[in-house]
Amino acid sequence: MTDVIKVADLGKTYPGGTEALRGVSFAVERGEVFCLLGRNGAGKTTLLRILATQLHPTVGHASVFGHDVVREPEAIRNRISVLPQEGRPMMMLSAYDHIRLMCQIRGMAKGEAIRRTEELMREFDLWEHRKKLSADLSGGLRQRVLLCMALTSKPELLFLDEPTIGLDPLGRRQVWALVRRLTREGVTVLLTTHYLEEAEHLADRLVIIDKGRPIFLGTVGEAKGLAGGETRVLVDDLAVNGNGPQILRPQSDREVLEIVERSLRNGWRVSFQPPSLEDAFIRLVGGTIDAEQTT
Image 1 (cartoon, helix red, strand yellow):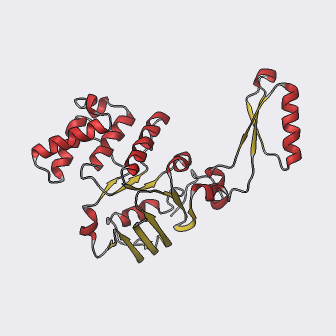
Image 2 (cartoon, one colour):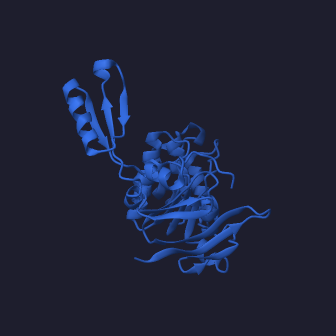
Image 3 (cartoon, helix red, strand yellow):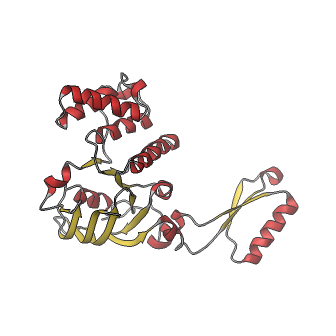
């Protein structure tokens, strides 16, 4: 595989002394979904902006497609696209016009822009919504419009900063399906997310950043392997005592057998839940991903 992104000992300190990143190193292969995980303020968006040539690092080196992000940004920009966390469609503009205008901003002639707009809208199941104002679209459809805008130039590398924030579960899964479709077509995706379930579902590999420094680099399976091996047992005795599911954490195989035997005797439903990416995150970082940071 070919490395699309290479990062070596990258650091960023903002004016005033806030150290957003320090000692970050990793590589991203062509066609993979690479996820940046961390609490709010951990440095994820700063790192994404550096790689997208929007921000200069203080120390270290980063390259995209073999081009230095500081010295050769123009060689990178026409091969990438960015969907920022704060991206929002204009509510009184139609879905069609959003994409067509972005095509023209990208330098396409009117006829080419019209063809590319229809191509994208049909590919992402938006054609039937083309005349609707953004204000009349669901959150999932609006996010599809933004993705189409990001894809007008057929980027080889797509940066997605919290692409499903605020979406309902169905809308999130629609975006997941679109991301996977893109990687099957050879697009590389660098993703930041606040949803550990999303990272667990999408990421080929990930880096966990805590207070600006990387504390884990590897696959989701490798991360879950660090969760301590604890298996949770879910016992549901709703039909008997009116209780909902209870989560038990047995400390030995003997305790597991006792729970199962008691459940069988009482007609309770029992299931097993292996360690999750959230368990690994908590063990590595020392808290949930929702905890706020000051940097």
